[in-house]
Image 1 (cartoon, one colour):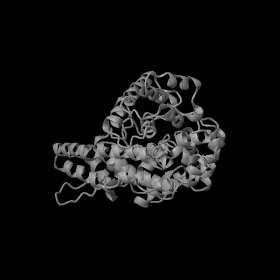
Image 2 (cartoon, rainbow, N blue to C red):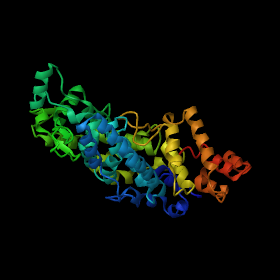
Image 3 (cartoon, rainbow, N blue to C red):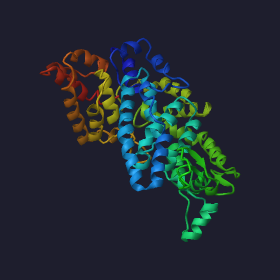
Image 4 (cartoon, helix red, strand yellow):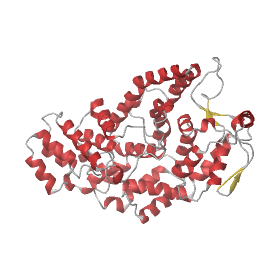
Length: 454
């Protein structure tokens, strides 16, 4: 790899170079990225054949209906049968992919619309959520992805909206009369939609907007909630429950929405997706991810303008990211997340048959298990989130172990050029040249400051 633009294309927009990939991208790095933008990305072959989130959800909630021990048994059985296997298949898809920009956007948007297995009952269904909500929409309309995420039973359960009751709804009134309580409404989903998914914390909403959106979203639930009769079939799908829904008009951001049942929340989401604050919030996150931890204002302005002008067309937004001059100005502005480091390491070394010890074990050691973000805000996207001294030492220890397992046929000189080419420092080249063995030379490459960044 000799061209700086090729390096940036493979690492900033991709997931690190795979063997032979530099030669494919080199004639037209920007075109190579743009060619990966398709209206309906195909599901990677390794991810086909897994059960839908609805099937897993239905099994877990059917077991819950019988009793806690049955729910625990169902969760444990499915975790062994499906979850670990799908986490491995997802990682292998990213190692093997010929369209790494699309996979990077899967990671970005899955993190934006985070759901986490820290809430155990949804843990096994989260890979299905990513397949069903994120993957089909990475180059579609933002409004469609927002609605798909907000209505999905995994998100509704993660943020407790499936049991949120309007105080004046039929069930809400009954509960208040029975318990003597003062609140049935849950604000979690509405708050995260406004703060994390659309407008951003400084986007112009207030607590009254949170409450009104919460009311509009009452009744957005799934069919795991409800009848305990054995004859009631749970399908694990979205279900609007009119008996939970707060009646009457709601006012969000100064606009009043008339009573419209399930459509009421959908109309508000569509307006939030088109809001200038949403455009700026999304643009800021994208520019932070692709340009620098401190996003340049002019780059944010440019992406926000495209977002607004195209009604949130993420294909056009993605093309605008490629066209940013700032993204091509600095080859190493970003630190890789732990997940990116592991994936890029396997891509570089051509590991087409990674084992759990190669993927899951280091991610556990690093503290970034897939689908287990610590909060609805997802994983951080700045250097400070990933390169604390202890984390760096864990990375180096794993790299040394991993390098010692690689075939002796790997030529460190070729690996160095594939990995770092135009950005390799004289110090890194010297360390690699002086390494006492081939595996230690490759470990030097993987542990280098340049390989830790993108």
